[in-house]
Length: 278
Length: 313
Image 1: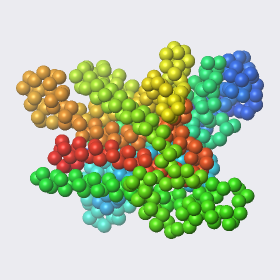
Image 2 (image 1 turned 180 degrees about the horizontal axis):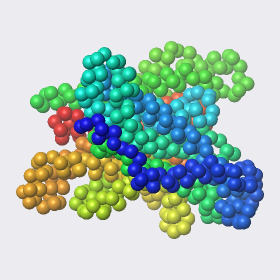
Image 3 (image 1 turned 90 degrees about the vertical axis):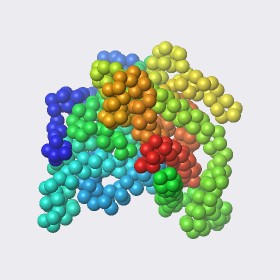
Image 4 (image 1 turned 90 degrees about the horizontal axis):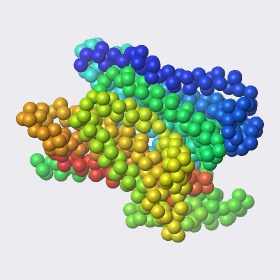
């Protein structure tokens, strides 16, 4: 396989179209807070009030404006998930390229993946949360990075393999380049298509882990506005004002499905490759 | 040949067991070095130093880490999970919830495998249209967190249609009062795993389709269903089994959230309680239990793979 065909994975118009709903959600999270007139912890309606002129999506269990909380509730989730996805993709890109060049690194990665498959991500977050007296999102971020990386390294490694076996990498090795410099100069530029896809999929996975933890009130505490917490708080009043839980649920769903669908479309190598190595 | 195979399989099993032990050691140490001391958790905040020391001796916390780890592992292998921070046997705490969660998990896996294989087989035999639809659907459900799905299911099936219970009523023995109470939690948990495994089944079947012996079977004019059941599916079994094995761990995070939504008396509730009370021994026991269950499923998938591929796993 020629390296060029591995790299081919540019964002196509189709992928951008699929990404549009997610960008819309991000945009609302950024500019939404500037448009609303209510504070996130200010009661303005009756509990679970249905939509009314001053509160377009009604009120939540304490009568706070659902729309204001919806606009405010995605920022931390998006930022945390993006940070996790950047870290996992960055670390696994380098380790994946190195594992294609050095057998020992590959076997360490494989052993670690075998180990971490036994520890579900949400359980790991709970362990870190109990073990260390840290509050906030830090345990969630650490656990999501540690548990997401080994599998991402396998994907990056599978894409880096054909590049590492190609002639010009052998030439670079023969002329005495170190593994790290070959990884950065020769391999990573040639697997960028895979890395873009990987980033998208890791982002969706991070949203999943961070939101599920948030739903269990790990990493975020009421009265903070957070989509996952909103779903939990407003599920009880869903017959009175469905928007309290449905709107944040839709926000998470649109964001995740849109990014996942776009990432699928840019996938440069057949997905069977990564899957077969599970 | 078969002797080599036996050695390969034995090596694989030994490796899985060793991996589990390493994980347990890491968790034990991680919890041990943490500042929140189990003895302190068990006592009131105004307890004296002497009380604390007695409590530490009682819980065995004054002994070296290595010794305590060995004792813990020894206990685990005989089914003794140790004492909670409050001095209650952990076996008593999990005796009711553990079978409930195993029941839900088993049903989720069963549903996942049957639906994923059925959809995968259908896309191989049907036209391109179905394949595209399945691709879109599996992407969509794979991206959705289970608690979002569960909330949607409650809105539709419990509140609007009023056909299934949204909350679990527990009998005196700690089990769900009726089988209907399992339906929504199981479906909410299975949906994401069906998305994941459908992709794997389709990829595995596609790979089998490219093999020469399947090619010649098709050229020989064998009926389609016969090619599917005799050639494609058996060849795809190892990959499908590996996919299902990864599902067990993937589903667990969802289990905790979904059990909380449906008020289900399972390990999720035990874990949430333990986290709230900072009860490290209980958390460690839950990690040990989940890790063991996942190991068993992985070993099963390893054996299946060794059986079909002749040890080339």
